[in-house]
Image 1 (tube, rainbow, N blue to C red):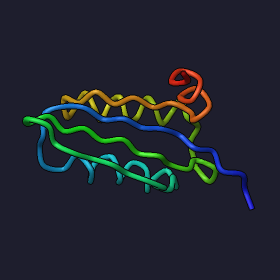
Image 2 (image 1 turned 60 degrees about the vertical axis):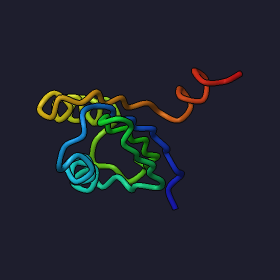
Image 3 (image 1 turned 90 degrees about the vertical axis):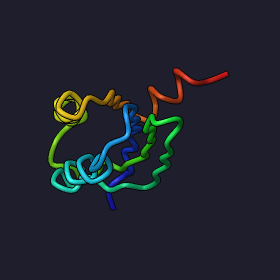
Length: 93
């Protein structure tokens, strides 16, 4: 069995139809499994954090970042993609 390669994806922007569907479709096409997802709407702003496993992915994290950046620009969203190790390092206390 392949070792898990967790990636953190965060999405912020004005709420609109299709955000989760658009991001999830890209992940599915790239064979990336969603492990956990949390989303909420705060005063009209959509916020979502996903933990995904890219171990079986057909693309690398840099390509995923580029694809999601393009999707974010199309939908007027800020989308960040970080490997779990970098995320943990940046958010340690």
